[in-house]
Image (cartoon, rainbow, N blue to C red; front, top):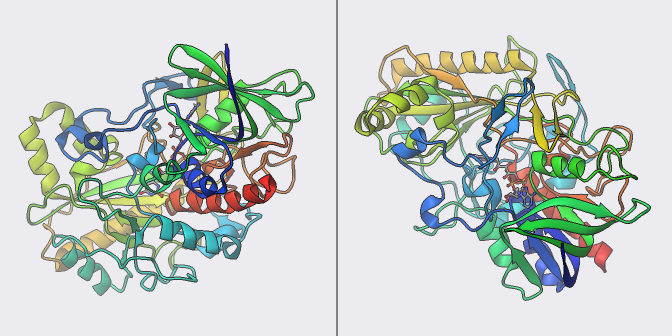
Length: 503
Ligand SMILES: Cc1cc2nc3c(=O)[nH]c(=O)nc-3n(C[C@H](O)[C@H](O)[C@H](O)COP(=O)(O)OP(=O)(O)OC[C@H]3O[C@@H](n4cnc5c(N)ncnc54)[C@H](O)[C@@H]3O)c2cc1C
């Protein structure tokens, strides 16, 4: 193995929402920062693809296999590239609701209280929204928590095909709200992501080095097991050991946990910082159902998501538990998760010629129903015989079913009043299958008790002084809104801590 001759102040592993955001905030400190990323930069034409191809091919699946609880292999839809999953995400950047930080009672149990509260994270949410140029309107949604500052840009208009539908939803007494979106305002690359607003800004500083196609395979501790001494990466065919004073994992919740487990040694026989046996446990991913509705007229198939509905977020008069979040999918030809899910489209994608499939997609309006799950220690990532096991059984399913049926009722009522929709009464739908892992979180949860958590309040591992985790691993519970803004805000919070520590 080659030992790199540089000594870094900080090594960051991964360049997604967590790693990219952290890197740009730390870069102006002048500290020597090394960023290791297993993927490479994506060509513009590969990012946020739109077209029939998205429905047909297993786009953005990692070139590797993970194994489910039955030992069946699957290829996860996750993006190894500079910017990570933010290169292919929907760019809707929502704050968790303030109550999401408290203990929340669901039908299946209680989601734990966060050691951080909304007010602790609020300044960082604001900073992340400014950094990621979020376009939104914080005044429309009754569940939106207080903002200390407006979004930096006003909300974008709904696509003409959506506007009458949005109006009809409001006429039902609901509160359709502009979805907060990160946008660059550049025609060639419109979606804001962690490469554009994170890594590219960090690389403007000479003290920052990015190595791509550098897959970290192991972390080595000192003989006492109290500090990380070396970060071992495979760079092409070459094994290279990098040395840094502080190591921050930002590989995504699944890969950060897997890396800690794969780095077991004499002092950490069950994996690094895993004396509590919590690393990899409490894996969460949202329950997601896509619902297709027939439009009355053709649409482009490629317009962005724009509307969010949270009227059922905390339940409804018939159900006193949280149900979740609804948003439109935008044009069906650009939603890469959608392509995985609805039996209608995925089955047809295999048999239909491109033209027919395209026509079908362009006559459809898509909706997402999204519900959080409870952390369950039996839902977990583990590392066995050099293989990544991903054991996940969704819970809180009645809340999600109720949300879906509630939304179907809304759609039926809409069809009677909105000119934008056809009266079909039929709504093909499908739940996102196991390989849709983009909303993963929770495998190294943050807490004050080392027996029940992996990370302390600064996202430092309880057991290893210079090891931090800054991706979605830290979530103690997962709310029903999308996770990326919370990952970004937390990265900015952690950056402050690290700047203080580095002096
Ligand atoms: C299709 C899709 C749509 C989505 N839409 C939205 C949305 O609209 N709104 C929202 O809030 N969220 C959305 N998400 C989820 C969002 O992208 C994630 O929550 C967010 O990116 C998580 O950030 P992260 O830093 O934890 O991980 P990631 O962004 O996944 O970054 C992890 C990085 O680590 C790298 N890496 C992994 N292992 C290693 C290793 N061993 N060595 C070196 N590098 C490594 C990866 O290549 C990657 O760059 C979506 C996800 C997907 C897949």
